[in-house]
Image 1 (cartoon, rainbow, N blue to C red):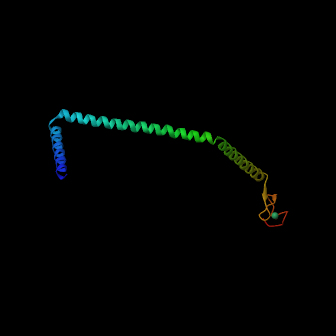
Image 2 (cartoon, helix red, strand yellow):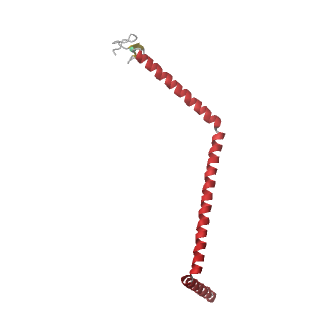
Image 3 (tube, helix red, strand yellow):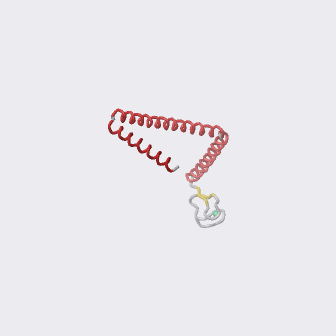
Length: 127
Ligand SMILES: [Zn+2]
């Protein structure tokens, strides 16, 4: 048992030694090994690029699916937003109109009174 382990380690050591020796003195073998390594690296990058492309197209597909599935909800939200904006514009337009006609609102009761009033015609509060 112990002897077998020793044998394996010994053979491995000799193998590494022979390999190192060949690499040091044989440019041909060295080139071959480097070429193989370059090729492996190139393949790795290629597969990484493919994965990335795959991921991108999948993500686009999922986004599209989600949009399609929730089309009705999105449309209704859009319509609600538009109507809220419309209301806002109406309120602004009214405020602008009353500003232009010189009207104001009583600080006490909120009644619409002429802009030059000193006292409210509704509650009598001083403006
Ligand atoms: Zn008032």
